[in-house]
Image (tube, rainbow over all chains, first blue to last red; front, side, top):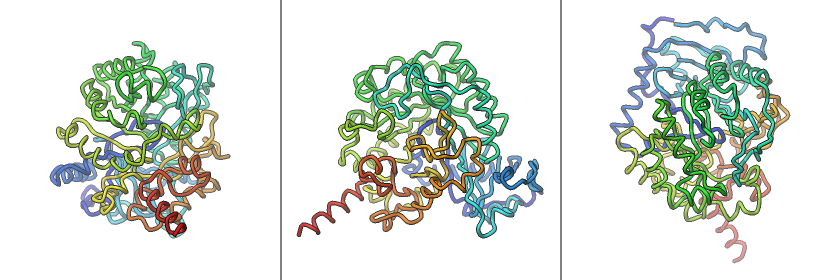
Length: 79
Length: 392
């Protein structure tokens, strides 16, 4: 995979779930960003976009065991 | 970052910041990747992204509403058993594991289990009551990305939810975890007694060093699955006021960006009473709000090693170590299928794609059926209208 190809756009982001959410009984979602200004909301997506462009990539293959696929698929490699 | 392909694109867990992102297929291609088999028509549903793992049923707190019915002599699976379950999470591509119980800090190997999860690429988080948090136990929490302390409010409020006053111990735990440099949040159970004091509860938690508060709906499971549930659950007026309450909390407590408020999956249905939010479900979705994801993005492992749709639901026959076979489990399939074609009034609700029908555990307890959440303001109004139509 080439870093030169890594140009995701904000419209291609369907959802952003921020925070760790450490509750052990029901899944939680940050809600205050919904009420924040457009600037704050845009900043959340800008930070995500920057991370998508710079972080090393590892692909996990959820179906590996049940489908007898080897642990590392062709895509499963660090960028 | 860790990428997991989905039929619609991919989930991406970032590592430079605590965030999970859903990218569409074009976005995935823009990363230079391709979904391959996961993007083919008829691909099997993927596994949860978050799993709640009961690592013990042991707890001396005796909370009146404990969803697990944890007790001082509760069972505690050996580490080897939990390692097998963590392997299953890794094989299924799960991103986050939340340790709970029972009181997880009673385990001597908690720090090792956190390392075990991280070694498998899974982010471990944990919930504790904070009771009995010795220095030794505190140090064992360092491997967790975040620790949440159960804190429903100051003395009387706490006692009204749990049946004893553990507020002081919880407050000390929050403060000590924060001072030790770990990320700490609080879990706040909303009952009709604790709801009116939620603002002061969260303000106190923030003052003690919490970075986040997760508001939890009181649910009828374990010891809370009794007639008493009906007297403790939020009133309809309180449910209707959740949206404005959240706005006020955001305005007064979150403006600096250093403290966040979360709501749990079961509370999302109550936002149907808030016109601004209900009319903009795309915004809720874009900011990652999850309604009932039981059996979908969420699953739970029971203390005896079974998979359940969520921590409050009955366990399926699927063994936790076989999580990769979740798509073949009939119970999980039924839960997922209902979300795709719910009954009215959910079928015509603007928030359906986010809310996903509200809490099925509440529906099963109150209505005796896997159906619309009877405590959702929209469902309550629909049923009221239906009754009036029948009477006229």
